[in-house]
Length: 227
Image (cartoon, rainbow, N blue to C red; front, side, top):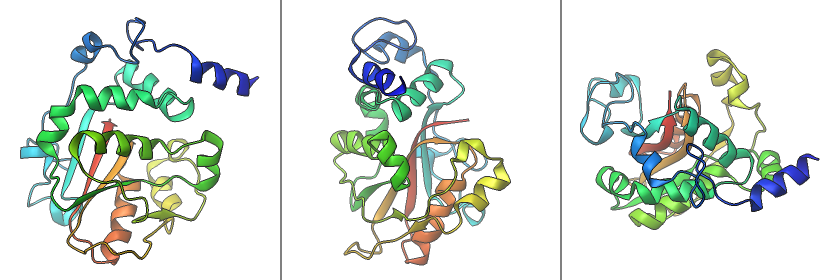
């Protein structure tokens, strides 16, 4: 029954998750009603140009920039992210990134940069049929002209799903999960980690820690929603 339900979800018509009109997963009118973040420092939450981490915050938070589009607590966003992640409706990412094209173009540095999707454990990716962060990265790549690189970061250890764990358990759960694959990337490449939802930073910080061990210094992130 679950397989039939997933097939039905995949091939059903697009309906706005807010007003239920056909044609979009989020129609233009409802997108205009969503509260989008103004640029701020992700650590201290105070205003910051282009979402850069403040100089005083960097010693406590190694990501140079964390671009956050909207709030996860919005009921429509929460529902849609879940469907995009688990039920094959990842085209919503395309609707959202295309609609807010100027937002991303204004805040992303394209020169000598790559998009690196946060990798999903192989078994989880096999069950879903895709990695949602890969889809986000591909759609973003289409609008800001930055290549997607899947080989910068790999996930070899099957860890428990983060959403089922406490904050302290999340950090421990991810230890040793990520590995850098040897490649020809220059150490001064700007790496944008791509994720769908961020709540405790654990995933981004663990990925950043591994990348820094390989002497990458300019590590940033783009996430669609945060608490």
